[in-house]
Image 1 (cartoon, rainbow, N blue to C red):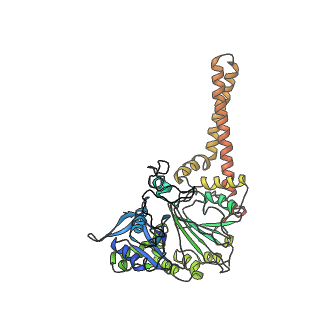
Image 2: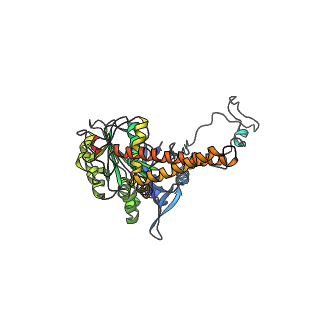
Image 3: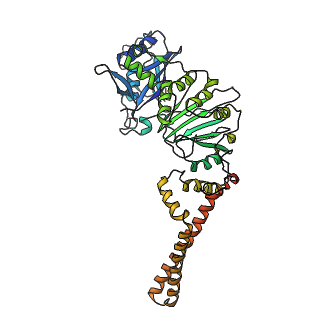
Length: 454
């Protein structure tokens, strides 16, 4: 089953009579392209649904009454360029300038001599040279991914990240707690995090500069607000390598032919406009009220933060934080991560990773804790036996140093001693880190930890 995502574009109309709205919408009807659009005067704004790396456009197969991938965006732009007059087309990074179609013009002179050729500026190629392209200007047969899929950022994500307001920020993602110390250090201010089902909710009192999230999570839902009300909130949803940003001024509507087709209209309702965001939030999160999400997206922007947090099942304190009424560190039940230097940050990261709240498989750390932390005396006894064996090997090496086996005993004994000492020191350091962060089941020191539930 195809996974669809919306893309936007504009058709610039240089002549409103030749490039009428009716001619554009008729093109979509003739090719059964599922689209939304709006007449914006000199431009026609359009939204399409695409799938796959080639970004094939959603079309209706009338014979089977099914939505199927049609031409790629690049091919569609080329078809529109040939069919429409006096337009410039820009859709998802693909641009076509079209035929200007100047019509008839008067000739200033009448030349009967076929050998006559007007003088051209030095930088202008002759007609013969212009009509015979050289091998240097011929397009290359191999096309890079950037040529096939324009609009990718340096991380290979499709879609533009808009400017974020300076106010509070909410992040919903499949991040782990072990990644959040670095997040707090990058932000430069405390952040609060708590579990929301299988998702992590992260709150900050100001926006994060640069990248939206640390690591490479599968999905990121970002809501950034401006409590002053000067800027509208920004909602960004990234799933895999596709990023969408919602516009609270969205006003596109189904093109006429889509509105008359039940199958096409249902698809547009689910995969274009607010439907694209509802589909992703329902897929990435649990216990989401899809209708409430849609109402929040289509309602007033100033009411959106509280409406959205309620629709995805977050407590009221999260909305208070986004409205600037409550500091993130005061969210009940949240773990607060303070900005720390590298050494302390590394200790916190290791503690959460070993406790099973990191990116690694929890079963792996469960076995590690059972062997090294739950029974420390057994581990120390084993390490002591290993160290004793290493000492015996060192003594044997000293007695036989002039012989070859003396060197072998020295290497074996040194390795056993080093391994035993490393195991003891590492285990003690990890246990101290867990205790400092309040992550040991028998630890009561959580109230003294720098990263503690508020």
